[in-house]
Image (tube, rainbow, N blue to C red; front, side, top):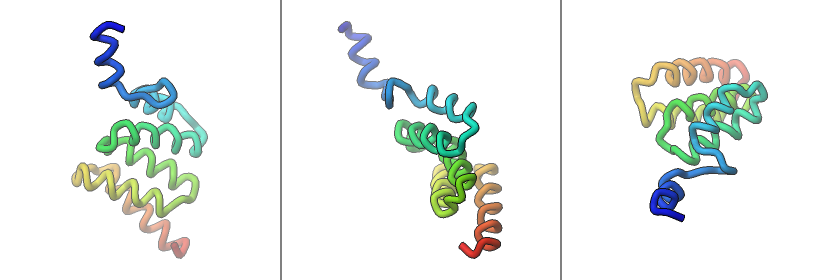
Length: 103
């Protein structure tokens, strides 16, 4: 293995042969919320400070009715990017939904 290959292995993290961009693209195309959770969860494992992936992971959890997990994702996204409008909007909508469902 050459020097380039050595550095690629160190700096290009992958899960199951896919990097964060691959997982993000797969999650964006996915229809099944459980598979979205897997895809965006892997993005977050590879890039923990990616607020966009956390927001989308929250959306997938919300689709599955996993409201507390969704809320945690939105809050984490907002801790990274406090002015992230989509995450703030999703968090507010989820708060309303949780009140309606008594969660």
